[in-house]
Length: 378
Image (cartoon, rainbow, N blue to C red; front, side, top):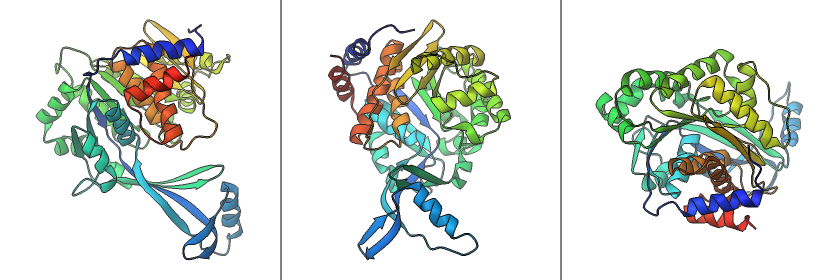
């Protein structure tokens, strides 16, 4: 566990990230989801064809809907922005910003790459699409967001489609043979991901390479999945662990859910990162994976076979945006882990990557991560 001050962990992380060789550009494979996100206002009153007042709160919309019970209602939505979405594409974009050579695989377009993913396609080394993307309508209010998802096309995230899209099993083996890091994310929405892991562990990874790549996994809010699904997920991760060093990344809510399924509880400890540290230790031992990381709103923690650590983070009370903050933490953490940085530096690199993103709306470069950390190291 960490007894270092926040400033000290920031100094350690800044020096570690600054020490990564400029030419370090690890090949990373990221998959397999993909969303087109529409950022939307819900109209309360419209003054003219070009002017309206948006509903201020979720409760305002709730009251309008409740009042329509037994009657009807016409609710106008205004799309303010259409942007890249999905845990995989957002994490892939953030990894590109930190010089990773990214191969992005996901539901990124049917006949061609959807225009919303073109900036990622321009930055990545390779992009492979499994089919048309899913969609999310994000209704934004002053007190939060309502994320209305249309997930039909995520059914294309399956092993057979993956093999076909990349050009057969030999091409799939080449893809997994060359990646120093692998990230398979959004397990919750990608119902075929457990089976993909099992098939990869059984048919692709055995004897594929002499080294052990690092394999990042993000469950992405598994509340709607059953306890049986989560147990099957854990079993598939143990299958992967035979061939790779599995890194499970969780936020606090996800960590609590997995603990509950495994018959454990969120530890009672202060500060919050100490509770998370203890939780990571328990989950890593129970799951048998190489590393478990948990990022909270104000701190983070991780546990590995040789120990565990927690650290204060970079809370921003008035963020420019929050959608994608966790994906950026994951990207910064994983990028640092691939570079061989110590765990506390990986945590702070993840926090700085996310911290820069929520304040600016931009995925930071390594130099910007160093600058962010050094500004908080005094």
